[in-house]
Image (cartoon, rainbow, N blue to C red; front, side):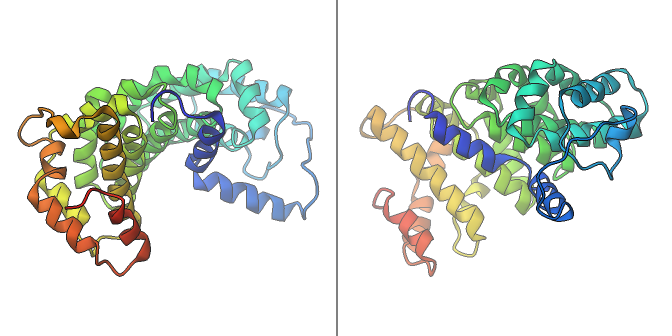
Length: 307
């Protein structure tokens, strides 16, 4: 689709992209509080706020105190605990605004350069929850290049890589910041093909976001992609992966149809995604998937061009 997507859809997509650990955190906290309303209580010190037993939503003064602690402390244990507390609180829309207005995004963002991988992961998780707010994305976008570097050059299938991919996925739900990833598309496909199932799903979520933007179609189709990519279209591939690669194909095809490119045979280099998606091997796989036992898979195939 062209232009920024509707805010309602963007917000819904961003919420879905928030870390599952924080959803669990909210549910378990609600159970411990026996269904009562959220309680706000004073804290004796900033470090008290990082205590794992302190599970209330922080108010403005407490968030300011915690951000000041994070900015000044060198202790890795306290730093990590402070980031976890801030990340948990950033799961609430009101605190997403408060943390931004307190200048908290640069304080948290500075921690993604920490050599401690656990601290880096917790900082990425906090930014991920903050990125649900579209206004916060304006400040978070300055970290996209660093996050891409961590995702593409860091340990494969690591917690840091997954946290970075989740953040990039949230940041690409709208078209506003997708162009920053243009030069990394080939590398993202490499991570897709070499990563485990969890990594594959997360990379595909990101690529599907990019594929919905016609402005990204050339970059996607021109990316050099190993031919093993077509193995993702095999009938035995896990459904959550298979449906996403089919959605990727569908979105790209829709973009090309809107631009009228399919009729004029656009020029892409050998070894590019274009040659894989519109080659005979992929056509054979699509014909086989048309007989897939899963109804959702069959439905996806039926809306693609007849092969």
